[in-house]
Every structure is written in structure tokens, then in C-alpha cells.
Length: 363
Ligand SMILES: [Zn+2]
Image 1 (cartoon, rainbow, N blue to C red):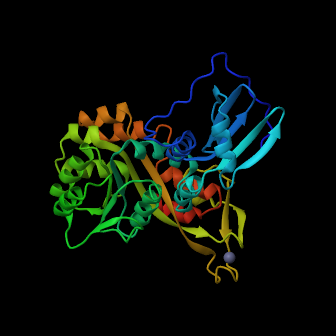
Image 2: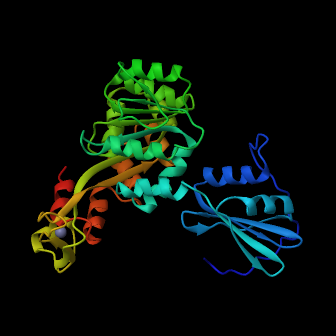
Image 3: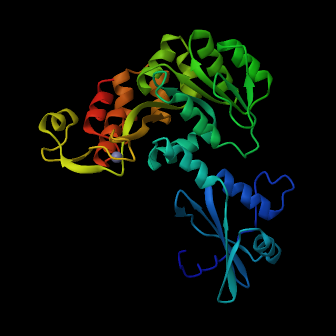
């Protein structure tokens, strides 16, 4: 673990203050906060006169928060199973690992999302609204919905699913589809509605309305990329203001074959492929000849390639004003990778082959 000096005590220690504690003990409230923020650890440093709280979120320790010394809270934490306690100076450092947070985030990385994408996506999911997952059937959309829902398993949220494979702890609507299924889901008073296969004007309107009324709505949609998913919603005449105000994120995905890690090896990319992918001549890529562990194929399964439009003020304005798709794409992918550049990055990393990336880029 990191060996940091005890941070200085703030001039005016802040009182412990927990939002929405609902009678929880301070320790429970702190753990609830850590879970909400997807922290992997809580660090508490105690000193005779003060207490410092930090959390590890997305691999980074947060800024220290200074509080009055609270021996009862420190004792409660020390008594928790899994708490690691180290004496330092006149106080202690108590580190508590939060189960699940990291593990759930890894579920998204396991299906091929980059850390950067996960970090951009999770705050949008927590705010609620409409999250579209674009892709052809068979592109892994239902796996993505299941991985996103795993983020909320264990937290007290009521999940209702429509057309998805069974999700642990979720209520499943059966025998209904589209708008009727969404209405039935709403009657269940859900926090989250997950729908695999948004397929028409009525369903799109119902999904947008459900998102507007404060639910997190995850819906897969048959579209080749994120901007096309927005176009499809426009084609279904979801009102621009409604789409603009409810959309939280639009994901799109494809699948590429994953190179066998046992037998892949670096080679110089062929000129023709380099040109298609925009690589420099002589760029290093990977190929695999096949071995026992990949049964001679050179590949072990598939991984998702993702792009995401995470709604910000400018994206919402562009959607509201009926903005041109090229402008929308340019803004959305100014800093974030689109499907093509995400696939090229996977080639560079040796996850897949240039040929797979070319196949993706051609739709
Ligand atoms: Zn192999």
C-alpha cells in the first residue's frame, strides 16, 4: 500500500456530515457513500485531534477530508471484517476494502470497455435518463446491458427488464413487448428499466417518457453507430427537446475476434492494411499462428469495441436544435474515440488484428 505522510489537519475541521443517512451510523453512511462513488477502498487516518477520510476511486485517492476526531467511528471501522489497521505515530490508518465496486467496474472492462470510457459513462448512468446501446443484433448488446446492470446489483434499486436474459434480483416483464412492456414496467415502480430491442416509434416515445420521469432507461437499438442511434430516434419522431433533455449517453458497439495471448506475436503491418487504418508504414501489429490453447485458430473468443456519446450541454443543444449529424459526431468524438479509432487502438495493443479493425470500419 502507499506510504504517505499523515496529511496536515485543516485549520477548521469540518463536522461529519452525511447526506441521506436515514438513521445509518456514520460508518454505514460512509460505506454507502463509498459504494455510491464506486470507491474500492476507504482510508481513515486517525490522530489525537483529527480524522482524515479519503477514498480510492478509479484507482486514485481522493483529496483528504478533515474531520473532528471520532473515536467511536474509528472503533466501528476497526471492528469491521476486512479492515486493515496500521499504527502510525499517535494514530492509526484504517483501510477498508469495499466489496464489489472494483469488481463491478471490471465487468465493463471485461466486455472490452476502456477505463476512460467506464469513467465517463458511470457518472452519466448515476444521473439517470436514457441510455441507448446501438449495435446489430448479435453485436453483444444484451451482454452490455447485463454488464451495466451489474453496477446496480447489490445497491437498493429496483430493476425491471424487458427482453433481456434473466438478471439476478431483477423483475422481468414477460409476454409483452415495446410500449406496452414499458408501461407494464412503469407500473412496477422501478428505478431502472432495461429493454433489449427498442423497435419502433411507440416504444421510443415510451422509453423517452420513462426516462423523463426520472427513471434510468437502458435500451438497445438496432443502429450501426451512436450518431445513427440518435438519427433513428429522430426518425421515430421523438421530440427533439425530449430526446435532448433525457439522453444520458449513447453507446455503440461491435465485436472483434480476440487474438490468442499465448501465440500472438508482433509483426510489421502490411502496407495495404496500414493505409486503410491510417498507420505509419512499418507500424507494429500482432498476428497469431495458432497453438494448443486456441485450438490452432489464433483467436480466443471476442471482445467488444465501443464508442460513446456522453451527453453534455453542447450535445443536448445540438440534439435539441436538430443539429447536423456530422457536427454532432465531430463534437462527440473530439476527445473520445469513435468505433474506428477504438478498433485501431485494440490493434496497437495486440488485442485484435488489423483485418478485424478494417472489417469494423467498413460496418
Ligand atoms: Zn494460440
